[in-house]
Amino acid sequence: DADVTQTPRNRITKTGKRIMLECSQTKGHDRMYWYRQDPGLGLRLIYYSFDVKDINKGEISDGYSVSRQAQAKFSLSLESAIPNQTALYFCATSRNTNTGELFFGEGSRLTVL
Amino acid sequence: GQSLEQPSEVTAVEGAIVQINCTYQTSGFYGLSWYQQHDGGAPTFLSYNALDGLEETGRFSSFLSRSDSYGYLLLQELQMKDSASYFCAVRDESNYQLIWGAGTKLIIKP
Image (cartoon, rainbow over all chains, first blue to last red; front, side, top):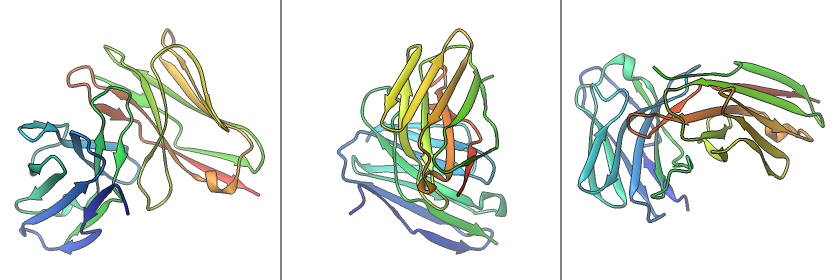
């Protein structure tokens, strides 16, 4: 089983709909992240959390919100989806060190029509 | 601001050696990371360089020169399975989170 699991893996929705992407991990890491990837671009950080009571905005947090329900769970919400939020979304975890090593889930492909 | 530059595409022959370069502009520096991503897959960590020099892990090596704000990933004895995109990333000085290059697509020909 994957150490970092994302659901759903694929989702097609319409403009204005609320969408939640969920992430759970069995690695025991405190730090969790949500990234967005668009074709031809690197990953861009949406939100990150260093523990259950810690939530921080990343580079592109507008239009998104997150919830850290437990050490193992970190969900990303789009309150009112718009077409330019069509992208591949990745959840990741890391140890409490600064080695630059992240462990990624398999990704959630979101299409907003 | 902070930015990273890497070539968008590199082509090499199976069995050969290829080098993927990354130059960065940052106010502070906390290390250069490299990741591999196959089409449709998740990024996977390859290496991290905090100090100048070469780090070797099997067929892959990563080099850093902090004075030149430059690093590279070296792949030896290329195999078809190495066809993927490779990303360099540095830590943002303001929040210590990773800033990513746009990625280099490595195409390997038989």
